[in-house]
Image 1: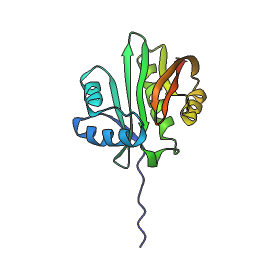
Image 2: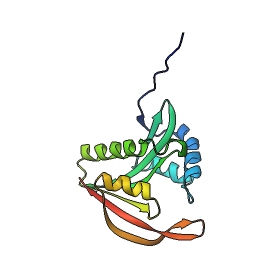
Image 3: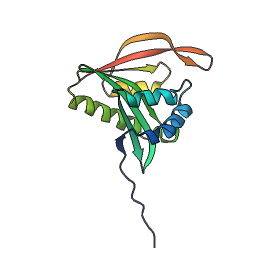
Image 4: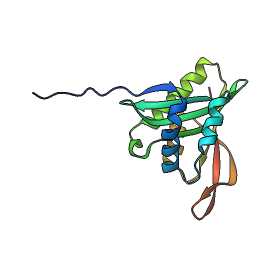
Length: 154
């Protein structure tokens, strides 16, 4: 007899204190200059929207967004390395955009490393436009690189 294991649909939940260790581990594995546990704990205690993306009950990603008046800034969006390239970044971004629409947010802003071509393509496909550059904003292994500022009108 062959048992079929039913895959669960990816789901979101509000971050919990018990998630921070796993999130910090994913962050450290994915970024040259990662957020610290303290950064994540500060985001939990602030008014930020902090969502965890789970697949088959495992944390595979997260995003942190800040709202002010009718605008939103995406502060961090990360998908675990072994889950990248499978559409989870799009799922997380769609979740945030839908949340912004429910809140009647007019504009969604973000910044992205100029070398992160996959993320830039994702953002452009969702309708984001480049609105500016922050020169030498991000650390790299051998110096610094620009941040591209992007915006989506909702």
